[in-house]
Length: 289
Ligand SMILES: *[C@@H]1O[C@H](CO)[C@@H](O)[C@H](O)[C@H]1NC(C)=O
Ligand SMILES: *[C@@H]1O[C@H](CO)[C@@H](O)[C@H](O)[C@H]1NC(C)=O
Ligand SMILES: *[C@@H]1O[C@H](CO)[C@@H](O)[C@H](O)[C@H]1NC(C)=O
Ligand SMILES: *[C@@H]1O[C@H](CO)[C@@H](O)[C@H](O)[C@H]1NC(C)=O
Ligand SMILES: *[C@@H]1O[C@H](CO)[C@@H](O)[C@H](O)[C@H]1NC(C)=O
Ligand SMILES: *[C@@H]1O[C@H](CO)[C@@H](O)[C@H](O)[C@H]1NC(C)=O
Image (cartoon, rainbow, N blue to C red):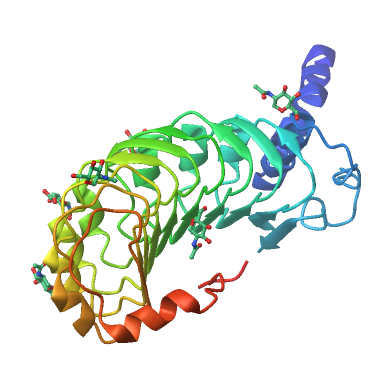
């Protein structure tokens, strides 16, 4: 009897092993993995009243962690695999830090993720194909990292905003990109992509911004681009595109910027667009953080 009580006492903490304590442990593991020179997460105290919902950068809904937002805090190191235990997470913003290592497939176990802002860090390795499991993902921004390999074929069909710019992605743009019918922005600029621009791209009826600058894309500009009825911005500067600029492009109703210099294209750009080359092009943010 005495022994039984003793064992019960030892196990008691585990009987209250709730979703909350799992999330506290997952966040603590995330913090312990990090290099935090500014002490940004010093206030992550397990005795705070609303732990972990009152921690810096953490937001909850119904006591479950739904957001982790820690931009611009000089945080470095690898992402803990245990982030996968934050199963209600909808938004992660860790942009403009010094995170490194690969974006692990365990992150793709957070099935409810809608917004993933990992741009301007030092992530390397490949984007795991399990990204296709995030069936509600709307924004995937990993611009300005050192990510290599090919663009995954299995991107979620829910994507609206795909920014893979300024990395080392290589190979061809997978034809499955044409399936992403909700896309409003694709930025693949400053990579090492080769092959041709797909004809099927023309099926992306909601696409407003197409940035393909500074890759090794060849072939011609498909006249199917003229089918992008929502297109506002088309740039593919500094590639190896040849042939004739499809005249139908000038008929696109919303097009404001067309930037195709440093290719081998011939044909003329209608005067109305030429004006744009002399206007300062301000950076466009579709969806603010
Ligand atoms: C990753 O970041 C940590 C902390 O900033 C650093 O100590 C480590 O050297 C980095 N690793 C690599 C491979 O760059
Ligand atoms: C992704 O989904 C597949 C099934 O579609 C499953 O086998 C795999 O374990 C999932 N991976 C992750 C990381 O959730
Ligand atoms: C696309 O990527 C390039 C290079 O990273 C960047 O300069 C540009 O501002 C991006 N465009 C948008 C709309 O985000
Ligand atoms: C995606 O596109 C590929 C090739 O373009 C096609 O074979 C496939 O059926 C599409 N998948 C979905 C889910 O639409
Ligand atoms: C143009 O868009 C329509 C959908 O509105 C699509 O059915 C058609 O295949 C597209 N044409 C080309 C050449 O991509
Ligand atoms: C453009 O064409 C010229 C002559 O055919 C060739 O020498 C040059 O390498 C081409 N440039 C690009 C960027 O493809």
